[in-house]
Amino acid sequence: MPYNFTDPGWDKVRDYDTSDFKEQPVTVVPGAWDKEISEVVAYLVTMGDRKVKLEVNQLFGIKDARVYIERELEVARANNGNPTYRPYLNRAISVMNQVKLMNP
Image (spheres, rainbow, N blue to C red):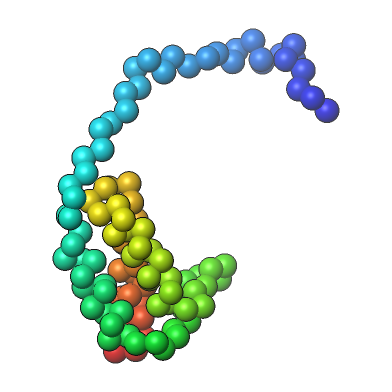
């Protein structure tokens, strides 16, 4: 059933004035993550071709940690220094640390 805009309460809905909202500039520092990226790459070299499965939680698992790290690292490298893409590097480092704990 479609909404009936004449229902009580719809007259109280107002458009929000967004003119006060200003986009924050993103400061990109090229090469800012080089050291961290090189640490992850060095670990991937020592990891070899072995497959490591991880269960992150009850709903999410990683079948091959190496492939997962490589994919996240690929995005982080392409956007090195852009804070919008920092979570990709953080996830790669997090999974790397979990693998290290499982297989020292």
